[in-house]
Image (cartoon, rainbow, N blue to C red):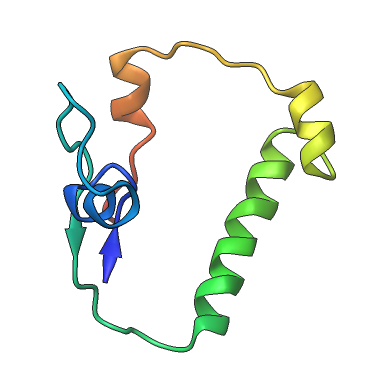
Amino acid sequence: KYRGQASADFQNDFYGGLKEKTVAEGIDFWAPVSGPAKDLIEQLLGGIRSGLTYGGARNFKELQRKAEFVEVSTSYIHESKPRHA
């Protein structure tokens, strides 16, 4: 079962309920098993390596030093989405 830390299910189990004047923001759901954990871990590590490369860094510490946050336009977001061949 997947459950985000802001889900009501997690909040109830971990904290005994939601804090006063708060609402659940996350979700929980059953996710089907889709293969070995090794495959998922390799995919996640590949994404991390890719992100480090985009940031011009060899490790997280270097990425923290080099990272810059920039605001992008709606057009950029639209243009950066994958395209169908």
